[in-house]
Length: 77
Image (cartoon, rainbow, N blue to C red; front, top):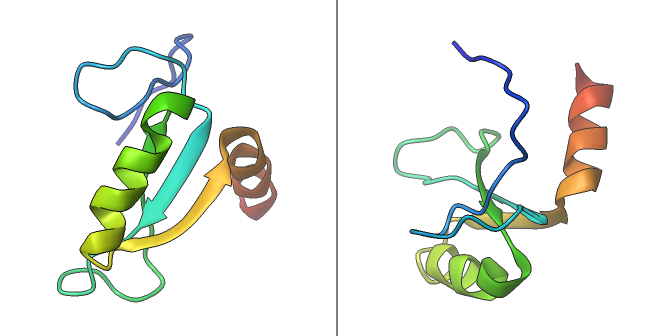
């Protein structure tokens, strides 16, 4: 279920309304299959903080520029 809007994607950090520049791909191995990827979006300011949050839990799998993620997602579809 989903819908398309004209809004630009924004950072996933609490309270942040900055445009997303990075995609943080992650999964929780206790509840997700190994190939499953959940995503958080990050602005430049919050990239490191969000990456660290996921990293210390062993969830972070990849950090990719947003434009690159969109291109690879379109190619997969």
